[in-house]
Image (cartoon, rainbow, N blue to C red; front, side, top):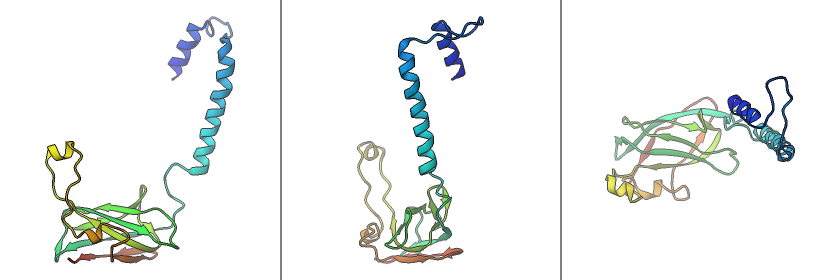
Length: 169
């Protein structure tokens, strides 16, 4: 960035050799716009944060997902906060032993309160199907894939929560 600025100053006749930089007339218009853009970006970062989510009150949530009595070897778990539980969803991939550990944004845990839980596992797909943007078939019951239809509701409490999920047909 500094090298680009120095190069620009050299091309426009400014800087170096004891001379003050000279700016083309358009530079006087562009400079206030650039200052305004930088100020707006700084204010936005301060107002909205940088996505850390550190203001959220999170609690550790982990467990094991089973389907037909066996650990689900792959898939996704989503805890969706319900009315009265403000905050974003918490998600986790399911490990090969069926275990999961929730994350909200980049932080481990889920917001404290009531959550509807969805669990999905999809069939493996071929390279051709992937390139054709085909959605693989669910290998878990569809009722667990939809937040409105899922019968799974759990309460996340302060501290560490061990929530084991058993899926039925």
